[in-house]
Length: 207
Image (cartoon, rainbow, N blue to C red):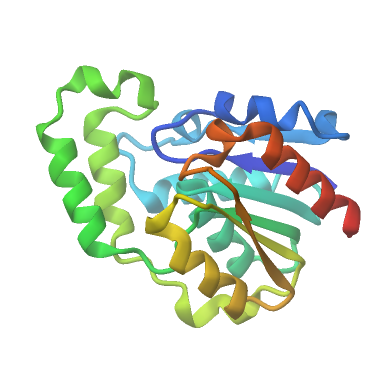
């Protein structure tokens, strides 16, 4: 089963490298760079998700999806839309109903930040703001029951912004379980890559 990894906003595919290289079947893993697959002139959630969906269609089903934050939202979206194509789902620091106030406040901060500050974030300032704006209305609350594959929800112990949603996802998705990563914050793949690899390996091996 092909395993597809998705990074968060402000990250690139390289931020999954330290975790993936610790897995037994690292050679069967693909980490998509969301900053490079968008084909529109402007980055919107819809266009980015469409490009991601097209990438997934290149692989034989079932596939395994593992996404962090933005990547987790997209993996969740895909598992709801194509439940028969997803055999395994891992959501790290993911939301299923976008926190509108948080996104608006985040975009307010982004607007006053200099363009140079976005160079290491993958997306430009304009595209980052556009992406957050177009994500604000996302709400998968009424569709979580469509996911039936084995699902692992992961959240960093210090990630207070996503802890509640992680608990709720584990409760609302059939065949889901929650794992909290000790001492880690939001970017678990950067802050605790080896521990994350251990958790993923144990989960994959249990299937």
